[in-house]
Length: 486
Image (tube, rainbow, N blue to C red; front, side):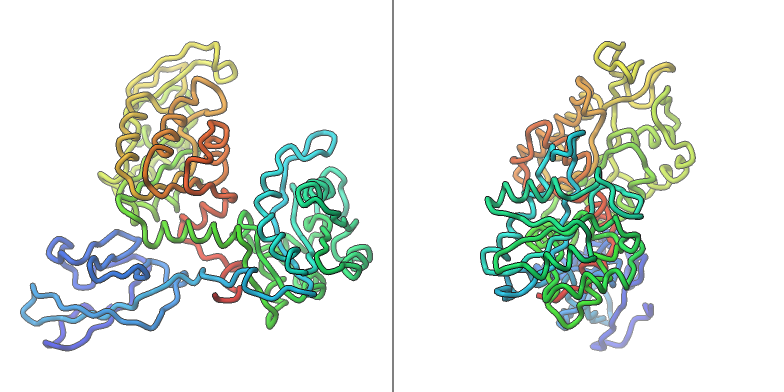
């Protein structure tokens, strides 16, 4: 990147590298109109319209072919900088925007639902989340072919405990109409039931992962699925970060045909991508869970974007150890201590760690064990940290109260076992009470918010833990990128 000042009136254009560097190598506070946000972005202050963002990963954005220019009056030779205004590539055509009447629509959904020992669906939330897209096709006379995975079968053929038949039954009950269930995925029964579809009809093909080609991204397997339909729709956000055949190879094989997103994927992308690219500020991230290693890239990316990152969960003890604290018998990643030190140094005042810890001496009997609250870094031998302490909860709540955008991924402690749910509950209450755009990043944090009764008091609860993490890391999704632009 050339940072040599040019003559007065000349235009200097800059392409930003992965590690963002200030274009003229001067302190950010000498340029009041520019804010430098570490790895993540350069925000041009009053010059910035809603669609402007300068990101560290150019592959996630597409230029709108507009240029914003300015001068820096602090320099004798006024330097004019040209910045491309960018929009995210993830604005995709939706199922509502294509004509489906009389056409076969292959829709990838996420029916990876929990089943009991009698093969009954114990939580139909994922089926219900797909209903808007399903009804969009059915109500407009489309012929709907639903594909999904469930669990982790061996990939060598049918396994009854992983059959999608219970999910098809649950869908039938929710729709109030028959839903056909194929006994295979791309073989004779699937072909016959797809051929027999009438306008407004629905068929569920058997578990994609009964075929080894699904996880391998096999083009031959994908081609058989693609040949069944006129339109492809991705409404499985939970697997958007994967390269499975149904996510990538199938839409690739359907090039030239409409390839769109469903309601759920469109909504997930809107909330998560808007939070990352144009957040209301202060922007606060709350990160919990057990392992620093699971959140390395997320923490790195968000430290460059957020105003504050709050750390909780068991990974806080790895940070505590990095600071020289005593962590007793707490869950810790000793091989990640140096990494934690680097993150602490990089984060500075942005990175907030617990100031106290609620600990106990028997994880297997939390309700009846000896428990006490200690200052962070002072957990005695024979005890382990199980939750953030009350002072940390108050401190975090004050930060959350001032936020305009909140992203939360990972609980603050062992929320499943009272009283170690107190920290997570306090944070959830603060998020629910705030006036911010609040996004819960799937997985355990979504389960915690639901279990504690706050799910209807936040802006958005993501359906994809791994996918939401991938977006927060700044990853591009091939499964979405190759779909039709809006």
